[in-house]
Length: 102
Image 1 (tube, helix red, strand yellow):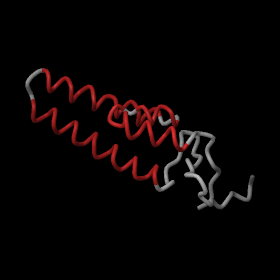
Image 2: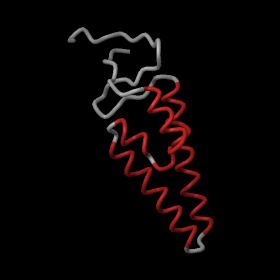
Image 3: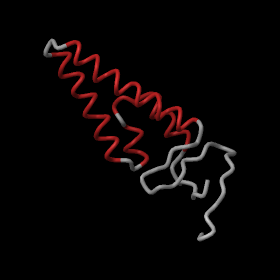
């Protein structure tokens, strides 16, 4: 894997994903704004559908958002996700192969 390590904190990203994952806070922290907006929108839509009595749509949106958050959290834990600048968010002790350009 040829990449450059991110200056974003692995621990902060994992904690944000675990605690506020369905809201998308970890994506905003990592600079992945489009995914953050999508996560936040799915959360808001699920709350909207819940409060308007459309429970099956609320469950559907929340389930999709939850599955996406689970996948992203696993990718963070395994050190295989990149921040908004394309740099790898490394776990402590992760060995990466640097690009020869740098």
